[in-house]
Image (cartoon, rainbow, N blue to C red; front, side, top):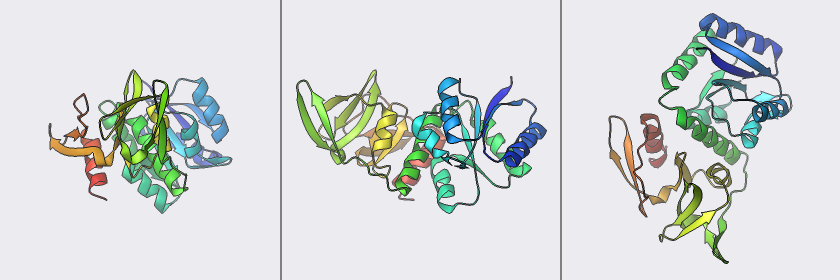
Length: 257
């Protein structure tokens, strides 16, 4: 089955070089669109079914490609392309996102594609989370102001709550905020929206259903080989099992690395 990919790149020479390398490595990868700008990319992703894989240059003629992620939730793996940028590369490493350095060589591209094919099925649900993780860290570098409190509704009343008093946000048909004291409040925002509002040093995304205050993580327990189970306080109503990739990431975060 053909793997459909989109290339977001404003330099024609770099784009043609990448298309040529992809064709040399794997003829089952089909480039279905080549897009040069942030604006056109946002329009394309809003109007078309998302591909299996995206190559995305960071610096485009009308901005940076992270602006695309601010407007569209992309559920496909992204391999970013960048000139050397120490901060961006650290962000990629922290979130488990793949990247290629310009000028792209065949060996590096082969390695990135090998990782894509290896993780495509078993880690498909984590791509949205990783994209938002990356966006959060880029926003932090840009000194985006994070929310410090929420005005939470309960019936006809509203309660001001500090972000540090929220244990976690979770989705169960509706989205809820559970406080450290166990109180529960419904919210109108999605988890993706909430994640972009708050400090990534304080809240982390454990799954597509769960956004957690680091201080609410009580215990990590090995489950399957390389995987962790997470116990929260107050207790979450379902078991939390992380993939090996997410388990390694969480241990690094909690160990302050």
